[in-house]
Image (cartoon, rainbow, N blue to C red; front, side):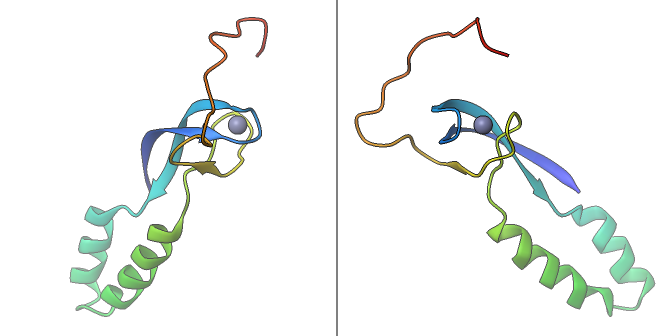
Length: 83
Ligand SMILES: [Zn+2]
């Protein structure tokens, strides 16, 4: 599994975080498809569809993140007293 990162809003922490999402390892699936004479393509497709529904998770609290913060939300600036 690979990981893609995106800057998203964490509701739990009320701030923007570098959220992470797991993606299928397509090179591995391609090799498995070749070795299984194409049978693995079915598994690959199912996993790819499942991964597309995977949401970006906050790396700190593991909560689901949103693409954009709520309307009117403003960053409170750096909060170095936390973590
Ligand atoms: Zn969080």
